[in-house]
Length: 311
Image 1 (tube, one colour):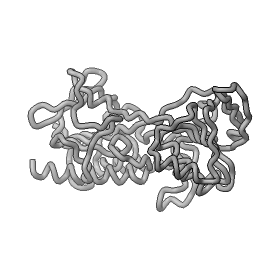
Image 2 (cartoon, one colour; image 1 turned 90 degrees about the horizontal axis):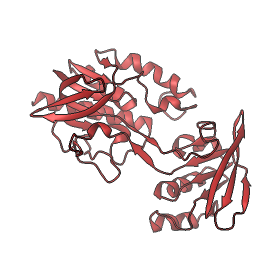
Image 3 (tube, rainbow, N blue to C red; image 1 turned 60 degrees about the vertical axis):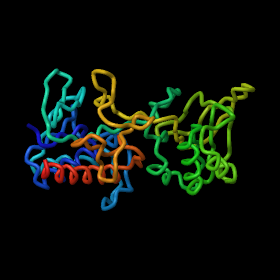
Image 4 (tube, rainbow, N blue to C red; image 1 turned 120 degrees about the vertical axis):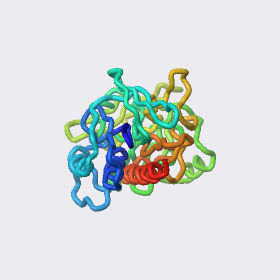
């Protein structure tokens, strides 16, 4: 039987594997169908991870993680997990090929992904001016003009964050009303560097080999069209957590989740199910930063070590 099964091979899963195996867990297995690394491997530049002074791509950044995290005996099961369920005092992991594994403890580190809009040019310029992370990429647009798309808390909060860095922020929303907290909206409206563009939709993202150069936008009330010259476009239209492995045969969830599907954990990354832990972007209130996901993974692994000692 597996002592600790880790579902997901991003920074949280790899960090969990490193800390679990180095901490003495003999049989730890990481389930990841492809090469470990996570969604950060798609990032063009990383410059805010402590201790890594060079600006590197996400792929280059994650490469040494694989060697280090498997150094102490972590095993890699190259298969996608379909479902995790609990049977008596242990867990049953069902792989997509029908094979099953049994584990004493499980860390869910399946992450999530920002929702895409389908706007023309979005895929072409993804990571080349189109971003879903102001904390990650805002600094690249210091003293420049950028645009933010969305009408919820995240969009308005990130517009405020970007206003501290950028020359000007255009906040684009398809409706006149916003879904965010009134106090957050008030702060944004009181910020001279934020210009509200409502009710507008983005019809096309334009650019060249160097990245985004402008947006074609349209007022849905008047049909007026404008060209917005910006090198950066931040999209905040929702986030999908990868929690499908929690769904049971009766459509219930294995553990408690919030209204967005994120796993509810405590500060030790424990869920409400004994022996089940979660780490990284799949958990509630995740900051969605690599350094935080790595911290979560380490915390979850330490909790697993303690759990295994007493069970």
